[in-house]
Image (spheres, rainbow, N blue to C red):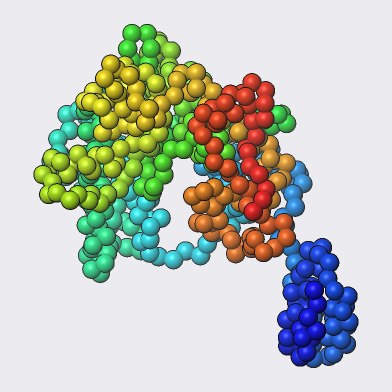
Length: 472
């Protein structure tokens, strides 16, 4: 319906015209009288420039069309070198990958100790602690609490002295408070790693293992349907192994300072494929496995698990006063590793030889009668094989899309967050739901049972691409 009052004065009429022009641009029917209103404003010198600005705004589009394969080859190389983390970025939003790794855009550096720096610092300290143990030929099982505290403290001091922006140990009070907390977090993480190993039959066989470095492991090679080859670099924080009879089980452990957990949906959609990729590389490449586990390896290598170890300082809440032992136990529960473990009670008991009911270390429960609890995050050997094959398909699809030049502004969204939430390139893409064709790629929630079926189907010839629907 048309209200004559809308054109009773110039400002009100112009505001109504803006709304009407947007509707017309979206293909909606509008009252013909607005055509006359538009002509009046365009013929008025004072208002003509404003009308042209509205025209320009309504015609604006931020859509990023594909670049041709020749340009993509020049940007990335025909033998695509990338990393699993980068491919996860591409799965989250192709345009963000293009800006960061194609155009190599960088933010202006500001000296500070902000959350990303703290995460890097914690990871580096744990890395050096592991290297310290390995290079000196020490047994993790012989480490005591005093040695652990002294060693991780020395590592922390050295790293802080060389921190970006200069030494902060004796800096402002805020910095000293941060340092005190960092020392506490690091000691707790280092000692918890030692405790995990002492209570497990699994033995660390490799720490900070590099794929694609000269002294490290060979890159992970993926043959693409186009005939090109994609070579992936990366780093495994830790690999543990356990040999029994004629079998060797391995588990991949990744240290995280954030709230990263394991979600099968992340694997399904290609946004969380790092651990599975590394596991697949060790299971499928005999030379790589021998280099990690030992040249004398004579038993077949089987999946034991993929786990995230959180480096954090959890807050424990209790209505009752806790003893030191009870508080320590509650902290262990908060820092329990997340991931996927082989659905084999014997293997589970070797991962945590102290397990009674719920494990303090791994996401598994053993009920009476040696049965796995329903809350356990486990997968059978067949399911681990499906995971590895499915992720190979994901990698093939992502590599192919990159070399074809797909740089679409297509951020993803699930029930928890969007890929724009922490993206540094939103000012470049100017993604806005108010713009035509700007829509999130929805990663719909699915049950684990449904995901297993979909991945199995994909491995048997179905659609193995990264799923997602385009709508609000």
